[in-house]
Amino acid sequence: MKRFLLALLTTLASNLPALAQNWVVEDPKFDALPNATAYYGARPGVFAGQYGYRIEVPKNWNGELVMYAHGFQGMQPTLRASLPPIREWFIQNGYAWAASSFSANGWAVREGTDETRDLALYFSQLVSKPKRTYLFGASMGGNVVSDSLGNYPTFYDGAMPVCGALTGLELFDYFLSYAAAADYVTGGNFVPNVQSDSDFFIKTYFGVILPTLGTPGNYTAKGKQFDSIIKYLSGGERPYRTEGLNLTLGGPLTYYSAWFGSSKPGIINHNTDKQVATNDYVQYRIDAGLGLEQSVLNSGVKRIKADPAVRITAGRYWYGIPSGRILVPVMSLHTSGDPFVPVNMEISYRQKVNAAGRGDLLVQRLIRRPGHCEFTPAEFQQGFSDLAKWVNNGVKPEGEDVLGDISNAGVKWTIPLRDDDPMKK
Image 1 (cartoon, one colour):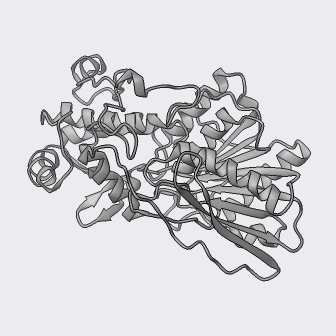
Image 2 (tube, rainbow, N blue to C red):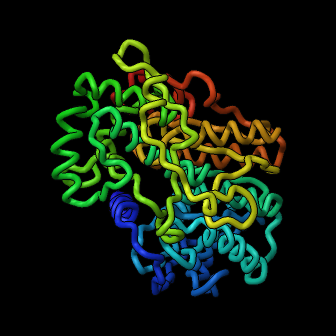
């Protein structure tokens, strides 16, 4: 995951021209688990090229299929079909699964949505038509889930996004908003022309930002202002928020330092020459008593407008912001301290689903950990089992109210609690 995030930072900052990449499908061959059959190969991509696929069907197949949508794979030329994180559990419990590599890397939500569906249709030809089909997506795959539920609302019977970038472009708006807040608090004047290369980190991060703000757990007075701002931007106070920011990405780079350089145009494969992200609509918040008034902050922070042509939020968009109009049960899992795809994705998705009058079809659970996609097999298994019971028997499971106080969320869903968790008895 770390190398993918480093690739993300590099591509975000470099403003590469539109990538006419020569994608190569890695050999998807794999060995089936005992009492299961493996299928693998390559299929034509929906738009161009090919995608690799893997399918595994247990001998005691229960007739239900799980489609797995992988997360961000960087800009490497090799297209790899992933294995779902609880593959063994699926096979042991009678579920077949299938996974596509997608026909492109980068922020490949459009490819992921259409080619995951294409593979599900192919499964019906190759094996048999399943009686139920679930969609399970991680990280960027969570945006594949929300995109699929918008564009193919009745194709899947239920969905489980995990650590999901559920509201698509709003993730990149968060990165930009983070950088703009730092730009204002430090007076660094590096937004929007920053390049997140070694020169930026040497001159601006180590020369301006770090001495002005400090680091999580060791902030200056201005750093406390900045931390309050990003606390609200990322979803509010919650377990392991600070620990997540301090996680390393390699060398001196941490998640805390990663987003200071995220204000250049373009997003990872499509429209790389256009300003895609925006903070124009963001209402910044800050706690009282820190020497910075909220009204002053909102009037002073730089506002970056997006090219409206790439902010399409309905129809056949490459990436966008879902409407929230879901028609099938959705069980969403998210780690509370996730510093890469923060909890604000869950909050925004809940607001959209509620506004669409579909709130009864969304259950969300926070897991008390700091890392991105830092789940245990038991948490995946409980989440999927509860989703399957909901789909099959109409038994809606419990979840978290992410619009309420989440400062101590996730105790019920975290299996097990960390040794340093204050709630561990």
